[in-house]
Figure 1: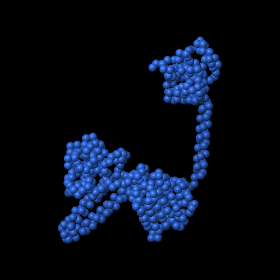
Figure 2: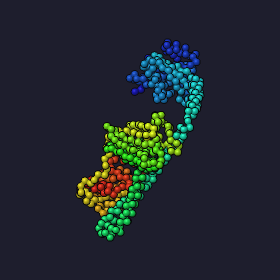
Figure 3: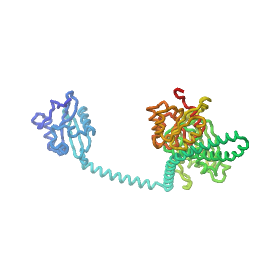
Figure 4: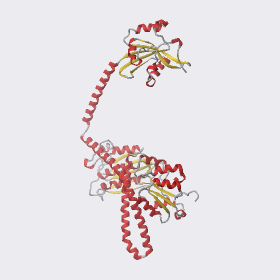
Length: 559
C-alpha cells in the first residue's frame, strides 16, 4: 500500500501561511534558539498505520546539523529516506513509541558518518507527530571520554600495584610450577595421541602373530609327541615371554591414550576400579619405595564421570599420599584404596599412613596456589583443580587428617544411569562358531590384513583389501560378506566415507561392519562414532575377540 500524509497535518514550507497557530508560534520562538529544533509529522498508509515521519519545521541549527545527510533543506523530506538505518538503530521505533504513548524521552547518539558528533535528542509528542530538540553535546562527551580513560588508567594502575604488593614469592612459584605442569600434560597428551596411534598398528599384528604362532606350535607339540614337545618347549617359552612383553606395551599405550583424552570433558559411565588401577600404574614410581598399596574394593556400579579426568584426580591423590610418607620403610607404610556403595553414590577413599596435616593446613588445602610441598616435589594438578574437576562431575571431594596419623581423601560420585555392557559377547550357538563364513578386511596397513588372515583363515574365507576405494567397488558388486572389519582412518578413503557411501547403495551390509582403530581420532571421527551403532575394536586386539565377532555376525538375507 502506498503511504499518504495525514490530510489534517500535511507538511508546508511556511507554517504561518497555513494558519497552524501552534506550529507558527513554535517556529517564532525556536528561530532564535542556539539549539536545534525540528518537528516531524506522521506519515500513514491507507489503513492509518504509521510508516514514516516527515519534516515540517526545522530551525537553522537543526538544518546545519542535519544537512550533512540531507544535502540541503530537510523540509518535506522523510526520516527513513535520509536515515534508513534508524530502523535498525532504534530511533524510528522510539519516535513511534513517543507518538503513541505521549511519554517524552531523551536519548544520546552519534550521526552516521559523523562519529565525533554527539547529539542529545529530547523527543515529545506534538499534535500528530513529534517535536525533537537537538543539542550538540560533543564537547561534553569528549571531556567525559578523556576523564573516563584517565580514571580507567589510574584505577588499573592502582589495582596492578596492589596485586603485585599482595603477591608472595611462594604463590608466584606455585603458579609457575602449575603452568609448567599443565604444559607438560598438554604436550604429553598430544604425543600420546600420535605415538599411541603409530604404535598400535604394528603392535596389533605383532601380538596377533605371536598368538597364532603360540597356538599352532602348541598344537604341533601336542600332536607330535614328547620328543617334539621337548624341542619346542624353549621356543614356546620365548614366544610367551614376547607376548607378555607386547601385552605390557599395549597396557602402556592404553594408559597414554587415556592421558591424551584429558581435554575431553564429556561424562559417561566409568569403572572406578579401572580408573584407580590406571592411576596406580602411573604413580608406582612414587609409591614403590615408600609404601605398599592395599586394595579394599567393594562391588560398585559404574559412576557418571570422565575417565581421563577422574584418573588424573586419583593420580594426584596417590602422588600426594606417597609424598606424605618418607622413603626407605615401604614395609611399614600403607596407601589404602577403598571403594563402596552408599545409596545411589559410589565412594572412593585414598588413605595413607604418612605425616598427616595440622587443622590449619587441612582448612586451606583446597585453596588455589596453596601448597606445603617443596619445588623439587612438583605441584601436580593441585587439590583446588582436583576439587573443580570432581565438582564438574557433580561429585564431592573431602579430606580428613591428623598429624602423625595420615590422611584420607574421599571422592563421592553419582552412579551412572547408563550401565556398561560388554561389547564382546560370546557366540550365539555352537553352529555359529563352526560355520564357515566370508570375511572382508579393509586396512591400509598390510600387516593387519596378514594377521587377520592368519587368525581367521583356517576356518573362514578371508578377503583382504588395503584401500577403501577398492572395498567400495567390491561391496557395490558383491555384498555377500558375513563380517566386514574396516579401519576407521585410511589415506585414500576413510572407513567413515566408505560407510556413508554404502549407506546410499548397499545399506543392508552396514550391520555387518566392525570398525578398527589405533586411537588417532579426529573431531569428525569422534562425532561419527557417536552417531552410529557399529561395533568398534581398538588395536591391538585379541584374536578371541575377532573370532567372536565373526561368530556373532548377523545373518545375511538368503542364508
